[in-house]
Amino acid sequence: MIPALFQILFGNQRNLLKETAEVFRKNAEEEGQRAHDFQLATLAQLSAEFQRADSHLFDRLIDGVNRLPRPLLALGTFGLLISAMFDPVWFAARMQGLALVPDPLWWLLGVIVTFYFGARHQMKGQAHQTQIAQALAHLPQVIETLSVTDQPRTAQHEEEQPDPTVSDLSLDQNPALMRWHQSNAQA
Image 1 (tube, rainbow, N blue to C red):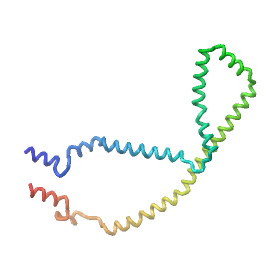
Image 2: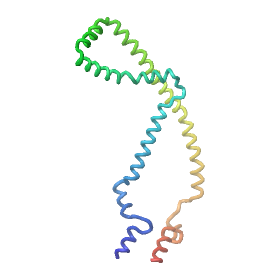
Image 3: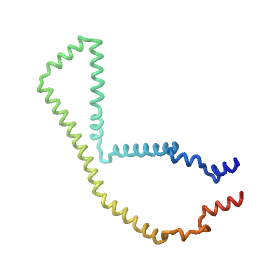
Image 4: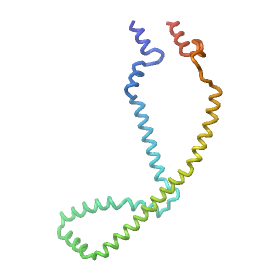
């Protein structure tokens, strides 16, 4: 009786327990593969975003400089705190020098930095919007191409395969039943 039970559960290269468990819990190995594929697609998209064929050396240099202010401000603030602890007199002299800079000069510096980096940010945003608009302009052509390529296959498939009915099927035409009968005959 036990061999018959094992034949039912694991016969014909099947694992009924595994197949039943996968109905209630997803397959961890397949989930890992899907996560891996998703990560690869994400990295491919990220690398495609940073590939710029029309980018010049100046643009790449300024893009690199645009990434520097935040880390430099953070590290500079730590440096100021450390220098204030080690040599308060030196630090006080530097801060007095900064206090002597007139306010209009600070405003001018702020305007120059804001307009330059703000204009570059605006330019990058507009270039991105242009790329999106170009992609959307091709969307009707893509949809038309997909619908055209789908139509012949669907029409051909409908002509070759009429809808079967229960009366059209017999036991002799069912390969699964034929294999089952053969395996029972051998056992």
